[in-house]
Amino acid sequence: LDSDRDGDPNDWNTGYSAAQSTQDLVIDTDDDNDGVVDVEDQFPLDPTETSDSDGDGVGDRSDAAPNDPAVQYLSLSEALGSIADDALRNCVENQSQGFESAGDLTSLECSHRGVRSFEGLQSFPNLSDLNLDGADTQGQALDLSPLSGLGKLERLGIGWSWGNALDLSPLSGLKRLRYLHANGSRVSRIDALVGLPNLRELYIGWSQIEDFSPLSEIKGLTNSQTNTNANSAFIIWFI
Image (cartoon, rainbow, N blue to C red; front, side, top):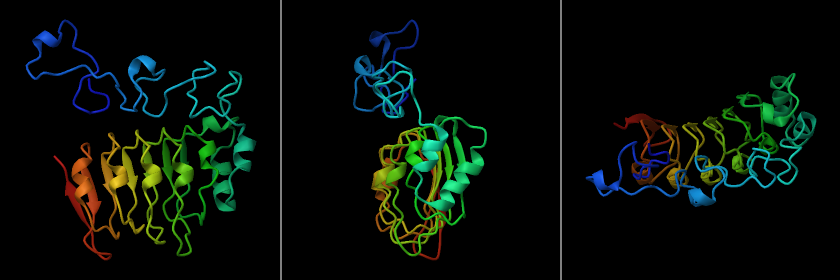
């Protein structure tokens, strides 16, 4: 098993050791490749968490009160109050009926709802599936920084916004991300995606990208939709 796909195994298979290796393999001391060695990492297989200060089982990055073991997440009403955009708040409220805390929300479908800002989504740290396609940018660039702390995201849609060039750098820490749809968002650079070991599907057609070389460094890609100009797109399959 090689959790972080860096070429070094988490451990030797049962009954085997370095003596049986024919490829000079070494055991990985940082199985999630988050920069913290396993012996010092309270979440050695979770690249989004390294510590749990209050010992409540929720990592400090996701914990709304990292020093209070009685509190892990904001109440739903508090989290809704942190959302700046009315359309987004209404969408979240409609899809969180019956929930008690922000930690209960794991999936959110808010595409083509006239959303103009993502501010406040950072209050929902357990989101794993998030569709924000068709945001109403009014010709401006989308700010993705509220998404930077959503370390559990596996699927993300931010396509068809047609604003100014979209900066993907806030997504560089989303180590669990497997699927990213950004067709029609005028992406100009994709180097921020190089460090995403689980990214399998990438859709960035109808963009403004000039340098596609970072695609070769995203080792896990199985397919990608990209383009050569603003009016065309093609699919690259990675075997």
